[in-house]
Amino acid sequence: MSYLLSTSSSSQYYISYIFIVLSSSIISYRLGKLLENIDQIMSNTSPENIMSACANCGKEGTDVTNTCNKCKSVMYCNAACKKKHRKKHKKQCERRVAELHDEKLFKQPPPLEDCPICMIRLPFLESGKVYMVCCGKMICTGCTHAPVYDDKGNAIAEKTCPFCRAPTPTDDEIIKRYEKRVDLNDATGIYNLGCHYFNGSYGLPQSYARALELYHRAGKLGSIPSYYNIGIAYYNGLGVERDAKKAAHYLEVAAIRGDGLARFNIGIDEANLGNMERALKHWVIAARDGDYRSVQSIKRLYSEGDATKDDYAKALRSYQAYLDEIKSDQRDEAAASDENYKYYESAVYCLPEKLI
Ligand SMILES: [Zn+2]
Ligand SMILES: [Zn+2]
Ligand SMILES: [Zn+2]
Ligand SMILES: [Zn+2]
Image (cartoon, rainbow, N blue to C red; front, top):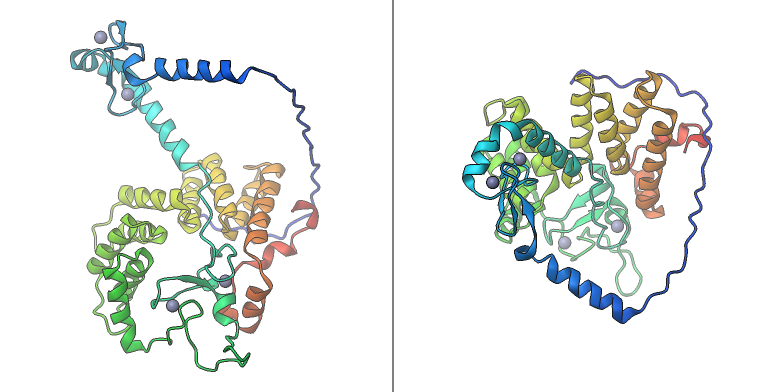
């Protein structure tokens, strides 16, 4: 990954805003008639009523139901027609498969969940959130740092979980608690235990194999960073044979689920291959997911003529929209008291305001 980020300082650019005013017209209709039509349409488009044409022999009918297994975009009347047409269809099929893949890959993923205490979106930066092994909640550092009061309004000195009030576990207790979270099929708990095996922390024997086993299990249960870690393991040959294809596959799975770090890295790979347009698309999505390095990378594309001023301005606005969703006074206080609680990259505020 040799695409280095530009460190050149930004110059002042101005953008113009275009307001599109959509005019609407009022359409009146008879509701009864409309519902009747919808009913008719629905009954005509039920699977047994769809008329298709065989891509090989041209035969039409409701019995032309043998779909191409790969692109699922063409139909045949039988397996023999499908086989006959394979050679002719190959190129079109590959193009359609690639299109379908890109449609999935370049979709803006749903945002990360909210902190269960302050109900504000959790930040992308790991230092802005803490996993609680007692109750399995991911809590923002604003809430973990905030003082806790008893019913008489006195601050409680003993550190407890701000969600379930369990006392902070000792190092010896942590792994036992993780095992309980594993028994409960808690995706993040399983992922974190995988990280502890990966690093050999808390007295666990270091094991890439065990870590990967846990990452796969956590990934299937919905853990987002698990697939990123599996991808990196394949990329570097840690616990598995080095395999660039598998590494790319797992990074994509992570990116589709909303892992900004995975998407940033995919963008780097695309840029290294000279696919600047694809790199830009990835970084625009990652900027909205909260990855500031992607904003910097788009700035570099712009400075080298591979992206437009609008692309760069859009990336800045996307990152700003992300910041607007995650910023809170309580999180700012935590970050000001301890830089380990930093929850976003603030450099964007140093850029000319007109660009944001
Ligand atoms: Zn046919
Ligand atoms: Zn096909
Ligand atoms: Zn919170
Ligand atoms: Zn708890």
